[in-house]
Amino acid sequence: MNKPLAIITGAGSGIGRATSIKFHENGYQVACLDLNLETAKETAEMISNEGKAYQVDVINHEEIKKISEIILKEFSNPDVLVNCAGISPSPMPVHLFEVDEWNRVININLNGSFYMMKYFIPSLLKNTNSSIVNISSVLGVVANPTTAGYAASKHGIVGLTKAAALDYAKQGLRVNCVGPGVIETNMNKDILKDIRIKEMLTNQTPLGRVAAPSEVANLIYFLCSDKATFITGSFFAVDGGYTAV
Ligand code: NAP
Image 1: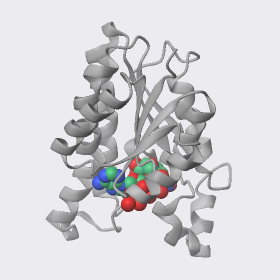
Image 2 (image 1 turned 90 degrees about the vertical axis):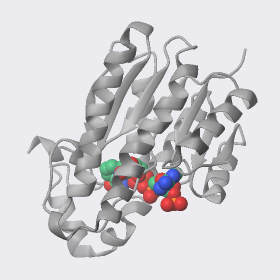
Image 3 (image 1 turned 135 degrees about the vertical axis):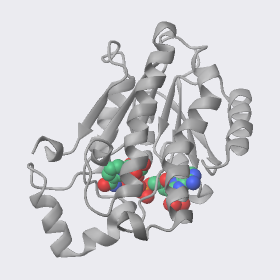
């Protein structure tokens, strides 16, 4: 029997890489999609080449359509889609946000997840018990000053997730999203280098530390597993208590 297939964007780094490894450890083949083909290939090598790396820019819906057709030919219908690709813009109050930068954040973080869902849902629906996990953020349910672009995109992910969960519930496709707190990845490696900022962020986190990407991957895997068969349309924080304060 064929191994199940997980499609993971942002697979070349951070949470996407840790998630690729987690699914591989649990018997999946993984299609590792990233803007950076080299890092996606590194991830594919880390999982013994059980899967394949693909270069894709999630803002390019035509490219995603093509890749979805290629993956369907090279593998089979996917069981899991995890949308991890994302960026975090420089902190900026709303009136100083450049229009192009605003559109870039919304395009990658929100529209990118929509495009992936649009083109992969038809094949996900061909498998029973298939599942989608979108990566939102704690800033998908709360906000901080100067985070408007990121917070808008991540709040959007929560709405997209809920609506899609309702669209496909009758067909057995579950759709959830996770909201990480501060995770040590390339996305925030520069700010975490600053000891004062790191201290401020850990102080805002009741568990008093930042987390490893594997701690987010554990939740994502759980949500796609047969331990989570009654869970759909939900947001789950993985934030050390950040949003409980
Ligand atoms: P990361 O290490 O920077 O990984 C993000 C990955 O997405 C990178 O491999 C990046 O490729 C890729 N990517 C960026 N733009 C893309 C595009 N247009 N098309 C395809 N791939 C693209 O960051 P991470 O922390 O793992 O982030 C993963 C997700 O978690 C993001 O959605 C982020 O918003 C969310 N998140 C992270 C944190 C945190 O504290 N780290 C907290 C809350 C939510 P390049 O390396 O080539 O740019």
